[in-house]
Structures are given as C-alpha cells and as structure tokens.
Length: 170
Image (tube, rainbow, N blue to C red; front, side, top):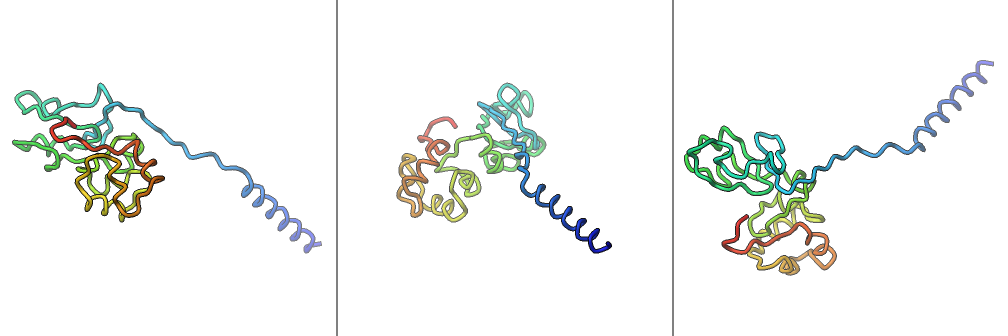
C-alpha cells in the first residue's frame, strides 16, 4: 500500500511538472517609449518637451547655449561645474547602447563609440571595432567595405545608422 501511495505521489508530481513545463509563459513585459528627442539627465530619461535642449536649460541663465543631442546622457552637477562644457567632456556622454536601441536613436557611424555601434542590429564588439577602424564614411552604404557586413546586415543596420555631413547640426 505504501508503494502504491508513493508511486501515485510520484506520478502526480511528474504530471504537475509536465503541465508547468508545457504551459506557455507570459511574455516579458517590455516598455517602449517613443521620443522624438530624448536626453538622460542624472540617470532619468527625459523625452520631448521635458528634455533639455541645451546646457543653459540645465545649468541656468548665464551659461553658454551649447546644444544637447538626441541620445545624450548628462550628469548635471559635473556638467554645470565645467566652465566650458562640451560633448565628451566630464558629465556629458551618450546613453547606454541598450537605451539607444530601445529608443531607436540613430547612431552616427563617424562619431559613435564602439559600444554605441554595438547597439545597431547584428553589430557585436568585433564589427564595431572594424567600423571604427574603417572611418570616415561618406554614406551608410560605405559600411559594405567593412569585412563582415554584407547586404543583409547593411539592410538591418540602415534604419538607425547615420553619417552626419560636416558642419551639419547633430
């Protein structure tokens, strides 16, 4: 009798485990925010009308009006303490690659860091390194000269890749 009870308990446990394994899981909750202009200020995403457009808007009157770009990440205290803030200086960088990807922020092939380039579809660390080494690019289509980027990968990258013309605003 004990063996029958133990066998039934084992079968019941296996059935429960099988049902749990076969039951479809709920998809991950993904939150996408559509922003025409996004800036990360002190780790907080600011979109559109809430996003500062220049340093003066962050640091107050009397500061130089240096424009922020879509996808910039700034630390107010560090940025505002700098007498001449500029992109790439302390307190002024770009959002993480995952954030750029989630917001579908375009990436400039001639100016982006390797980690920013990795946010492009199908671009890993090695291809990002090759893209950096192949600079400058006159057009996005020039990526086809980078070993490892063929027509399919170029098609995947094209919606987010940009080449800013010299003298063009960010």
